[in-house]
Length: 266
Image (cartoon, rainbow, N blue to C red):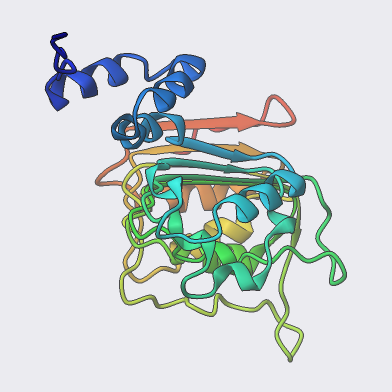
């Protein structure tokens, strides 16, 4: 009578170590998913650590494949890169929406080359506070809807690192025609802003600097990187440096045009 040999059993810790060793190799990780269902969770941890939506088509594919946030691999994502923020709709922000599956993201990057107008407005509502542990935010728009962007910034209470890049700034106006203040200008848990600030606005840093300096909680950046286009940015840079006087470790000012003097900053 033939003897049936038992299937070999490896400790879960060893299997996890094997999968973790392949963290930077996408093809072998995909093969690991085919070995056993028990390998899938650990493998997904690495396969979906960084998710990027390059186009509206890829976004729609994700929403079709993973409509339920409770079973979506989105909760493995630590980095979320979005090159098509215009494809997101207010529905994506609703409670229980697929977007809420990305609740463990610590780094978010939004990039768009679409000019902001009333007809082509990018809704930032789907991204408001979607991940309560977000630490790093990069916004790079051809044209920045300023107040709405600042509302987005203030929706992440643990935010440390902030990058804002724009070739044009759209100042949101209130009904009286004046510069609208952020609608969440006094959040109950304002961001900590204890990391780095990197700002380039083609029209000058004033719109973002003024809002940051007006926060009642203050700013505590360790690093400042500011790109100038105008000498008028000098006073605001001084104010930012003074605002971070107890925490600032590094200051970089990129001058455009070249030759702008910064010797009186500190």
